[in-house]
Structure formats: structure tokens, C-alpha cells
Image (cartoon, rainbow, N blue to C red; front, side, top):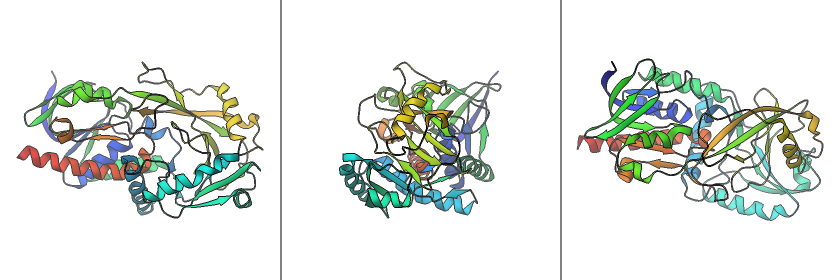
Length: 383
């Protein structure tokens, strides 16, 4: 027979957003339980990315992505320094090839309007003086000194440790089966080895790939306005041998992707990706994370536009991730969707939907936002 108990806050999902939100709530004095269907933290979107700390160059003015990326990046650097997590403030070049240089200043103007600092535009000769391996066809670049890379797994462990130190806990192997918004609480039915009925004052849905499905499984007014999920697979290739760059190298962005960028990870390994492979409309987790070796041809063709010295033989399939999207293929890039009870009508429920890049960089800022919303929700429920 399933156990039945009451809880203050339940966070669904122990990815980076769930961990950061749970930590913030626990440190604010709330009693927090995290439900995680897997047997480890950060198994999907959180750990399958570039480990890049984004400056906030690309996002629409006033968007949640812009706000949380810029604020979250500053918070993240301070957090990593304070907790001894390895980080490299290596900087980034966004390089333009041929007539693409005309679009550089527009990106800078938008970024500066969102508060991104220390940006500049240089010509091709100047950028090649710093990174000589770049192609002669590179006609200019944005210089972003505040971009970097870090050890994301050590960051996740630090968040988990602080959550637990503040009295929070994680229930692994505990999937959400169903639920309902009821008077004074949100009722959750969980599965796994120890099924339970939980009546929580506040529920934070940080389910990542599963977030929309989770929201739909909880009966309440919010369910009528849920979006259709879309997914984009991004593959990565390792570069064998020495990579002759000291900074992150990004091409000009597209509507669905920041392009096949080049990073040097914490271990000094050169890496390319992610690409953008839209999955079928009926795609759903669990996903196939295998990397098709045949995609090396696409990677090589794209990257040799700015790095002509790369040979295809140096590319080896590495890993892949899947980005949750709230917009279909061909549509302008969507924003994060952070739904509070007062916006969707389901008291006590906060939904975090479409949290893709720059979610990792934004995580601490999103967490503070969630803690603020949860405080307002608790105040309303006490009436």
C-alpha cells in the first residue's frame, strides 16, 4: 500500500534547474523534497552540453533568456570561485565569414541592451593575429571576454551538497505518475519501489524533457494552456590531436542553433558541436543519444569555413544531447516559460518549460526567481 504524507515543497527533477531551485528554497527555510525518476542527478539535458558559460549575446531584449543568462552568468562565476569548482574565463570569438560581418554589430547592440559587458567588434586581420589558425575568409568577430567553460559535474555536486546541508533531500527512482491541484495543496502520486501520495503546499515542475508531460499529468486549470513539446538533438565530435585555439570559436548563430562551435574543455580536449537535428513531431523521451559517425561530413564542412586546417580524419563521435523546445522547426527561437500560479490558475504549482540553452548558465538566476514565486504562492495559500 502506498504511503501518504504532507510536504512543504516538492521539486520534480534533479537536473541543474531542479537542484538549483531546491537549494534556493531550502536555504530560504522551506522543507524541500526532490523527486527524480533516475538513480542519479543531472542525467539528461544538464550533463549533455558544451559546459559553456554564456555571456548572453543572442537573446531578445527583455526575454527571460536574456535576463537570466546575464544575471545567472555573474552569479555562476561567483559561485564557482567560492566553491572551488574549476572554471576557465577563456573568452569567445563569434566569427563572421565573408559578408556575414555586417551582422556582428547588431548582435553586439542587442547584447549590450541586455546588459552584456566588455564586448567589441574587430576585423579579420585583428582576430587572426590572436587566433592564427582561423581562415583568411574570416572578415570580423565579436570578442566576448566574459564567456568561459567550467566543470559542470562538480557544480551539480556542489548544489546537491548545499541542498542536503540545508535539510533538503532527493528521492531517486521516484517518477511522478499523476496528480491534481486541490484546495490548499497539490496532490502527487509517485511510483517506483516506494509509491506514495504526497500533498505538497508548493510543487516546482523542473522536469526538463518531461516537464510538459508532467504538467499534463497534474489535473488543474494550467493544463488547458500547455504547449506542444518539440525536441532538437545536438551531437558532438571530439577533435583528435592538438587544437590550435585558446578561445571558444563560434560561427554566426541561426534561428535554432548557436552553430557548430569549437570549445576546449577543462581537460584540454578540442570539441565541436552541437549541431541541430530536429526530431519528429511525435518524438518523446527516452531519446537515442548515439552519435551517427556519418555526421562528421556535415561537421567538417561547417567548421572548415572558419578553420581550414581541420581534416575529417581527426573527428571522432563523442556524445549527444537533446534540447527541449517550445517552438517548431523554422520558427524564431523561443523563450523560457516560467509559469507561476497567478498566471495559469493552478495554486501551488510552478512550471518550468522549455528550459534549454542557456539554462545551465542561467540556473542560479532561475532558482532565485522560482524561490520568489514560491514565496508569493505560499503567502497566497495562507491567505
